[in-house]
Each structure stands twice: as structure tokens, then as C-alpha cells.
Image (tube, rainbow over all chains, first blue to last red; front, side, top):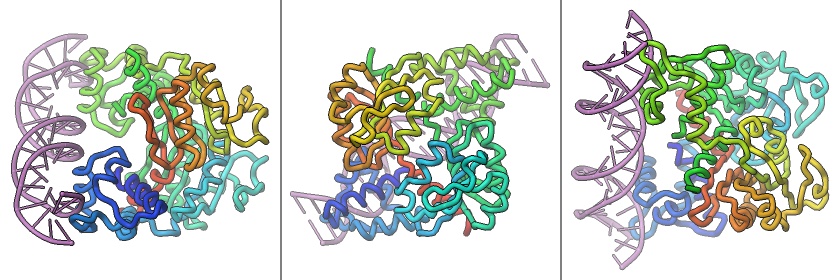
Length: 200
Length: 200
DNA sequence: GTATGTGAATTTCTTCACAGCA
DNA sequence: TGCTGTGAAGAAATTCACATAC
């Protein structure tokens, strides 16, 4: 499942390069996997490949988007407009995939009322109420670790069911809320493991 | 292996809360895993637990840091000082884990020469030369997708062996270079999958 | 009683290898 | 010939269950 998103961006790339079709071999090479893996993965989505030809890029991309639920209109709020929150709010990739960033929140009165990416920054005290009003389904947490849990709870209260959490802390939430953690320090830590193993 | 970094930040958190010891059960609960998994993982690192008592937090944390190669002094350059690169350069978590951000690069002449986090932003044309001079081992790529491959190659030339790549594109590099991709759109895409499966 | 460390059992994931189609 | 789709084989990861230690 983790690989589907990778396939999708790979297919998009190939389409931009002008291809209409791709073999499992080619896709595997590009995403750093192998042909058998790709075929097995894609076979679960239905039959999009033609023997001797390959996979139909547009059809397959559509199908993966569908499986991932990437229809436009997912409403997302961003909490914590520090430098990371700011970067995320301005990030174009989100909009391109149909994510609609519809609310920004921060606890700093100096930021509240200011505009970013066409949206006014709202006080975090109003998070639960306002994000419910905004009908947000997803939330991005970019606040410091100590504030993250209470922000997450406010989001959950507001009916947000998916959270992308950049705070390096585990959120404790009701089961119906799905959380994905992106811990940048952990990413570097894992790289440093490879660094070590490469210099014996 | 992916989980070691998670254990580490969990252990740190517990230490800050004043504990000196933790059971596999407690750790598992906190990182969203189970006790057997934790014990199995930790058993590979040596024997840090005492039956009836639990694991010794400081000793175990030290051991995981060691295994991950988290000694202070990893020299990191950041390429692309857009809003994301800026956020990464300012991020304190990196320094706290001993990563030393020692060089910033951008292709925008308006940014070059300006200072950020105490460092002057250097022209990306000088990337290969300057990061070799800086003895950087790691690089963070936060440039737009079309520029990422050439930046990666310059880094590889300069002797960088680990790259954290935020550009939504697969980098094609010699095998000796390890790349970790962080694709924010993919993260949201996977959340959207759960969003879909939660609303049947 | 509580909790680790670990072989064995189980489950999950990946790769192989080949029939069948273009 | 080139390529997919897939059952079977193989590898890897996870969980169980229990002997052992505090």
C-alpha cells in the first residue's frame, strides 16, 4: 500500500515525459523495486496491463488515485504557523493533488489576523469550533511537541479523522482518528545509520 | 530498524518524565506496537533489560544512539532555501540530535549572501566545491523537482553519501549514496486512503 | 508476581517461474 | 519475442509461549 503513492507519482512523471504505456520492469526500475513486485501490487487493482505492451498510464493513474481516495476537495487545516507550518501552507504539491488547505491556526497573537496563502491566520483557541465550521477532514500539526496533544484533541473534537503530525511525539487519540507521523529528526537518524555502515 | 529511532525518542520522553526504567509493555504501548515486538527488537542490541524490572533507560538510549551512529558532528548542508529549506535550516531538533548544519545553498542571487541561522546562503553553483570544503557527509535537498537531480549529483561529487530528499522525484545516483525520500504529498495521499476507508 | 530473552509457530511479504496473451 | 497475471516457493517479519531471572 505504501508503494501505491510512489507508483502514482512515477506514472505521472512518465506521462509528462510523453509515454502512454509502461512495463512493470520500467516502473520497478524507477521506483527502486522490481518487476515482480510491481506486477503483484498492480494486479490487486484490477487488470490494467496488456501482455506484450505494458500498463496503460492514464487508466492506471486514475485507478490508483481512486484507490487512494485522491478525489479533489479534501479539506485540510494547518495548525502552527512557524517556519514549517508556513512552508506546508505554501506548498503547491498539496493543491495539485486536490488537497484544499482551508484554515490556518496559531497561538501567537502577533500572527493572528495576518494572511498567508490567501487565508487569515486564526487563533488556536478557536480551533475546534472553526475547523468544524470549515468541515475539515484532515489536519496538519506543526506546533512544538508540548502543544501537539491538545491540538490533536481539538482537531478530533472538530471531527477531523486524519492527522499528519510533524511534532516529534506520539499522539494519544481515539481509534477512529488516523495519525501519520513525520519526524524529521528520525529521518536523519536513519540516514546516519547508513552513514555509519558505509564507513567501516 | 525503522523502529529504533522511534524507540529512542520514546525513551527520551520517558526520561524527561522522570522514569529510569521501562517495561517492554510500556514502550510498546507508547510507540503503537506490542511488547513482544519491542523485546525482540531490543534483544538484538544486547541485554539491557532485567526481568521483573524492565529496561534501563539511559543505557538503552545510549546503545540505540550508538547503533544509529548518532554521535554529534554529522555535517549537513541544506540546498534550496525556499520556505521548506528555511524551516529545515531553522529546525532545532537537528542540532539537538547532534546534526551540524554547516552550509546553505540557493540558486536565487537575491538570497545569496543573506544570513540564516548564522550561516551565509551560498550560490548553488559552488555546491560541489564548497560542500567538499565543508566536509559535509549529508545533504538535504529542498529544491523544486526539476533541479533536484543535478543538485544530488553535485552533492555526490562533493563526497556526500547520505541525502534526505524532499523533492517529489526519484534521484538516480551511484549506489554508494543512500537516499531517503520524504514526499509530503505521498504522506497526505496515504492519509486520504484511510479517510476513504473510514467513511464507508 | 512481574518482566525479559528467545526458539518455535505463524503470518505476511517478496520473489520465482511459467502459462497465456499480443 | 515481450510482457502480464498468478499460483507456488521462499524469505522475512511478527507473534506466541515459556523457561528463566528479579
